[in-house]
Length: 439
Image 1 (cartoon, helix red, strand yellow):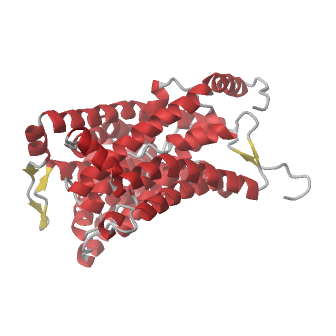
Image 2 (image 1 turned 180 degrees about the vertical axis):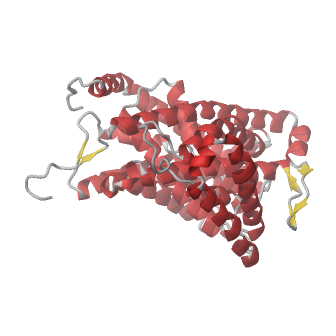
Image 3 (image 1 turned 135 degrees about the vertical axis):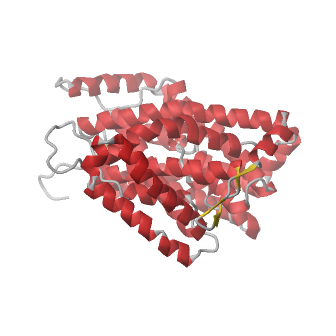
């Protein structure tokens, strides 16, 4: 560090405008988290009380061929491949916003959450690989404990009425965004099946046309909502179909399409409140994703016939179960906290004086809630409904509940301090002086 330059601060509060945006995103995600929990709970009840109805519904095939591609899929596969593509489209929009206009656009600001996300992915994966080392088939699930479910985590925060400070909320969202980026890369690279080069090359055409229209016609699309449905949506569907046919998981199409959407408003926009197409699409699609797509996926994916107490014990003591539970609960906490501490020390930085390392640890434990993407990776690793997939899903649910309870205790004990920090944040936004002592 050069003389005269102030020491960098880890988890410092960012700009007020970015803080407002983060709060809006987290508020909508927390609502989706409650619906996600309802969908998962309904799945477990149906799978164990009326298994014939549940599994018959999940395995019911609907669809036909389109562009020479067989799309006669079960409802469970439609939920995982099509509905989650909408979820991943929103993830892609959030990723692009963070890289273009958010906290990830500044390398120094992005360093901490990105390194923390890497640690939070690497350590759980290594733990899982170590536990399942002797079983080659089980090792295929190494990426199951790598993901963090932001909606589930925020639902937990809402339940415990946590007044998480602005800096921690921003860190949580940015960490989850970086975590999602890594998860997307893992799915695209390691879980592609029998890649068909012809379909992959053909996919470039509608994707390029989508990008051209989104950028060149942004003003028109913003002004005319019908154009987004009649012009952009069909190109998105064609891109999804060709991605599915190529062997790359179809949800990746949502991310690729999102990366083609402009974040900044059209040139010549004078109003400070002008929004880009990415913001408008996110605003329109997030209720559908949080209120329908993800809960329906959870309903069709989380249902496992446990088989009583003995079945549950057998699942959580199986190497896959142990790897998932230890990876999510302990691996995430160690990986995120350790990586954050390490990068802080290497930068010769200091933690924000209103926070303590127990706050980082509590947030890292919360990161052990791996649900939506973890369930998807379990299905990609072992096949939907297989014995190993069922074990993985029971372990994911167990680990997520355990992490939620532990995080609730840790963060709940700090809630009074968080309320004081939140009042100081509000005072700063109004122009009042800060004034919180070090923890």
